[in-house]
Amino acid sequence: MLELTIMKRDEVALSAILVPVDALMIVLAFTVSYWLRLQTEVIYLLDFPLYLQFVFSVLPVWLLVFALEGLYRVGSARRGFDELAGIFVGVSLGVLLVMAAIFLTNTELNSRVILIYAYVLSLGFVWLGRWFIRSIQQLFYRYGVGLRRTVLIGSNNVALQLAAEMIHRSELGYAYLGYVEPENKAKKVPGLGKRLGSIDDLSEIINRQYPNELIVADSSLSDSTMLQILSLSNERRIDLRLSPNILGVQTSHVTYQAMAGIPLIEVQRTPLQGWGRVLKRVADVVGAFVGIVVFSPLMIVTALAVRLTSAGPIIYKNERVGQEKELFNTYKFRTMRIEYCVGDQYGGTAALKQEEELIQSPKNTRTGALYKIADDPRLTPIGDFLRKTSLDEFPQFFNVLFGTMSLVGPRPHQPREVAKYKPWQEKLFTIKPGITGMAQISGRSNLDFDDEARLDISYIENWSPWLDLSIFIRTPITLLQKRKAV
View 1 (cartoon, rainbow, N blue to C red):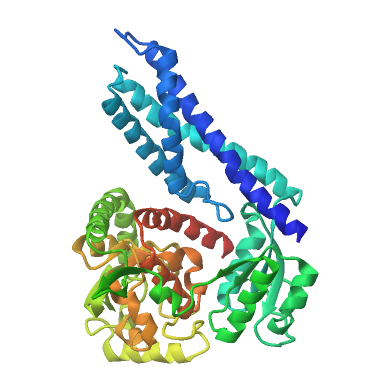
View 2: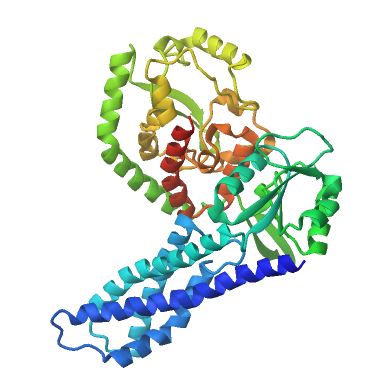
C-alpha cells in the first residue's frame, strides 16, 4: 500500500508543479511583451512595476481558468493535442479576462499591441514550460519512477487495444502487469501479455502484483462480478476505470429537473443540440470547402488514375443509412471493376449475389453486422492502393458540403448491414455519419462492430468542438501508422 501512496503523491506533485510553471511562463510572456513594445516608438507606457503588479493581480483568475479547463487534472492529465487545445482555450480566456480587468479598473496600459504579443507568447511559453516538465517526467518513467502499475480485466478486442497502447506508448506512464481472464480459461491470448489468472483469483492477484489501477475492458461482466471488483478496489484503495458498457454509453449524458416536486432525469441523446448542432454544421461547411480546395489537385490526379486503369464512371455512388435512418448516396472514387459494383446502375443482381458469396466465404475477416473482404478479387489495378490510403473517401467532402454527412461522426453503413444492428446500436443514427470518427482513429477495421459502436456512441454522448478537432487531426496520423504496419 505504501507504493500506491507514493504513486498518488507523484501524480499530485506533477499537477502541483505545473501551477507555478504556468504562472512563471505567463509572467514571462507579459514581461517579454512589454520589452518588445519598448523597442518601437511609444508615447507612453504604464511603468513596469505597476504593469507587473497588474499582471500578478489577474494571474490567480487566469490559473483558475486553467484548472477549470482540466489542465491540472490528477491521474488523467491531458496530453498531446488535447493538452494543446486546453492551453489554447485557457490562454484565450485569460487574455479576455485581462481585457475585462483593464476596462473595469481603468488601468492605463495604453498599448493594445502588448496584449497581442502577450497572447501569442503565452501560448508558446506555457506549452514550452509543460513540454519541459513532461520531458523530466519521461526521464523518471525510464527509471520506473511514477509508473502506474495496471491490470486489465478482460480478453476482448478492447483489452487488446488498451494493452497495445500501454505497452507501446511509454510516455503514458503505465507499467502493464498483465490481464485477468473473466472466465477460468487456461489458454493464453496472444498480444495481451502475461495471463495473471481468472476473475476468481483477483484478490490474490492484487496481493501479488500490487497494482495502482484496474481497467475493466469487458462490458459483458455480470453485476455480481462488477460489485466484487468494485468492492476490492475500494477495500485496497486501487483506482478503477471501466470501458463504456451498453447501458453506460446510453445514459451518461443526463440533465435533471423537477415536475410537481418530483425530480426527473432526462436522458439526452447528445450534446449536439441547439448551438452545438449549429457550430458543428458551420465547421463542416468550412472544413469541407477548405478540404475540396486544398486536395483538389490530388483528387484530379486520382480521378484520372481511376479513368485510365478501368472502364466505367470515376465516382461510385453507394446507398447508405444516415441520420434518423434517412437514405443517401455516398460519393467515393470507384475501386472495383464496374461489373462488380453493387447497385442497379452498376452490376445489379449479379454483383450483389457475388458480394454475398464473398461475405459467406473465409475471405470475410469481420463478424457481426459489417463485413470486410480480404484480397478482394473485384478490385481495379489501383483499387487496393486507394482503399489503403483512403484516397477513395475524398469525394465525401461533397457529401459534407451537401449536408448528408459530417467531417466527424460514425461511419455510414448499407441498409442490409443496418438490418443486423442490435437495438442499442440504433443510437448511431442520432447524428450525421462522418468521414472519420472515434472508431477510425482507435483501430480502423480491426475492431469488432460492437466495440466500434461503443466508441462512436461514446463520441455522440461526449461531443465537443475540441473532440472533433482532435479526431480530425489524428486521422492522417492513424493512416500513416497503418501504412507502416502493412
